[in-house]
Length: 342
Ligand code: HEC
Ligand code: HEC
Ligand code: HEC
Ligand code: HEC
Ligand code: HEC
Ligand code: HEC
Ligand code: HEC
Ligand code: HEC
Image 1 (cartoon, protein in one colour):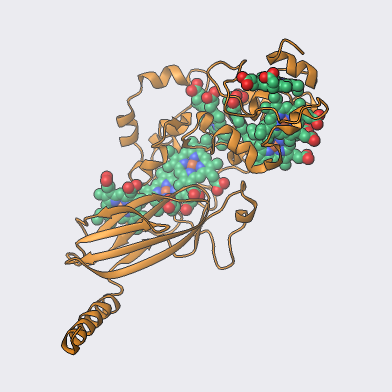
Image 2 (tube, rainbow, N blue to C red):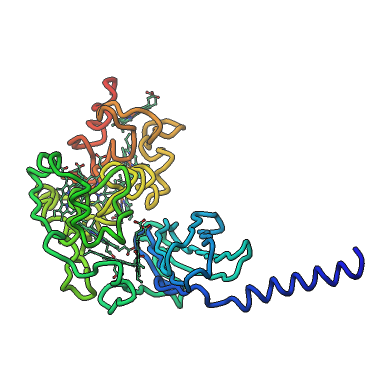
């Protein structure tokens, strides 16, 4: 490379670098603040920028490209999925094929299921969005809830009634839909969330605004009275159920798994009981070297389901210790439900 070329390359590099430098603060993040803590997996982001200042917004989550947005107004809103633990959100504003602004946000997703992520690192905190003046959003979004955000829900007649309901009408009546629309965009949706009756659980008069009852079971048992009566009468109640933490295992909104479980059933149990994964515990005292299968086979009793921990243990409660499923009273009776030979 000639001296002249090196000179030009350096100039171009400097102009480029200064461009990024000098271009700082084109994009303003309205929400979320850096170092926020989230509970659930969906993060809403809103940005503002001077008109015409950005051609393309490039969004990366943990270095993976997630979105490319062509801004059509001074405001851009989008949402991204978070992993448990720390998440790095990189937002690059591109003008005439050059990056002119870069913003990086660190968002921590807390979880009761992974012990190292039970608590956020120091310096991180929960930044509530609601309960503050949000005049920057109200030109385009309605923020005051209305009557249609709370519908009477009768769990006994629910599935019949919703067959007749029209989802597009229900969501169009919701105040929450315009910002939280992706919260129900999963294969399994919880009854009241599916009809956008968000205020059946989120109280607009609570402090902080929209807080739900704690423990979760106080909220859940308002409708699930059959389960409440059944489980609370049992002699043995599973640890997390006993302390009312239903949302450790169930999403109150929607998920990829049946029963709105936050993980597939087997993975869920193993998050807290890793030592049981190999199934060796099932055959202690049976002179078997190999463990008993705990997954990957069809469940012989619960047709259409796969074998899992829940094939042998009730996830909530039982009258017998070890929480036997299938109404079994002891291990031998349990074996017999699936193996005639015992
Ligand atoms: C200039 C108008 C405008 C302003 C101001 C505005 N939004 Fe939006 N927002 C929109 C539009 C339009 C959509 C819907 C886009 C669509 O339907 O695809 C939207 C969608 C959203 C979404 C859903 C994004 C998704 O893909 O899931 C969120 C979250 C959101 N806005 C949050 C906010 C917040 C928070 C504020 C205030 C800080 C705000 N918006 C201010 C116009 C605006
Ligand atoms: C203008 C957009 C907007 C609208 C409309 C909106 N939300 Fe939110 N909401 C947000 C944003 C942004 C957050 C921050 C968390 C996130 O990233 O999702 C949030 C967070 C929340 C939280 C967590 C607590 C908090 O304050 O951060 C709850 C609960 C909630 N919203 C419920 C509702 C309900 C119920 C409605 C309808 C009555 C509603 N929201 C309408 C944008 C909106
Ligand atoms: C069955 C009760 C129930 C219903 C119905 C419900 N939620 Fe929630 N929601 C909860 C619970 C429980 C939490 C977790 C609160 C916590 O522990 O921080 C929550 C949390 C949230 C959060 C905060 C997420 C975060 O990462 O911290 C948002 C946003 C939210 N709900 C929005 C909605 C919207 C929008 C609707 C309507 C579609 C809705 N909810 C319906 C029970 C409910
Ligand atoms: C406002 C009433 C209401 C509240 C509160 C409520 N649920 Fe539900 N739940 C329903 C309805 C309605 C259904 C759907 C029943 C149907 O489809 O027949 C349902 C279904 C479920 C299912 C799936 C059941 C099945 O057999 O597929 C689970 C799991 C569940 N809820 C858990 C919870 C948890 C956990 C909470 C607390 C965070 C909760 N629910 C709070 C009304 C409620
Ligand atoms: C340790 C995880 C865990 C906890 C905590 C938990 N559940 Fe469940 N729940 C499950 C699993 C797993 C299933 C699916 C069982 C199956 O495969 O048959 C289930 C199924 C359900 C069902 C539908 C079937 C039934 O048994 O009626 C409801 C309703 C339900 N749970 C509500 C709740 C409520 C309410 C709480 C809190 C009091 C709660 N769950 C706490 C794991 C859990
Ligand atoms: C959030 C963590 C957590 C999850 C998830 C979890 N458990 Fe547990 N489990 C506990 C705790 C805590 C105890 C109580 C430990 C004790 O008392 O020694 C317990 C105890 C048990 C016991 C022993 C009960 C007894 O009387 O000896 C069984 C069986 C069990 N869990 C099965 C399951 C199954 C099946 C799943 C999945 C559906 C599951 N667990 C998911 C935390 C969890
Ligand atoms: C085929 C039936 C079966 C399956 C599948 C199964 N277990 Fe067990 N589980 C048992 C038996 C039998 C015992 C009692 C062992 C003993 O007597 O020590 C038990 C005991 C337990 C205990 C209580 C241990 C104690 O010392 O109190 C826990 C916790 C447990 N299992 C969790 C799980 C988890 C998590 C899974 C899924 C990875 C699972 N089990 C799958 C049959 C099963
Ligand atoms: C929920 C049903 C279920 C229960 C309860 C159950 N098993 Fe199994 N067991 C299975 C399935 C499924 C297999 C795998 C069969 C295959 O490989 O096709 C299996 C395999 C086995 C095997 C491996 C050899 C064989 O027969 O295929 C042994 C040994 C065994 N079980 C013993 C037990 C004992 C002892 C108990 C009671 C502590 C028990 N099982 C409870 C479903 C069950």
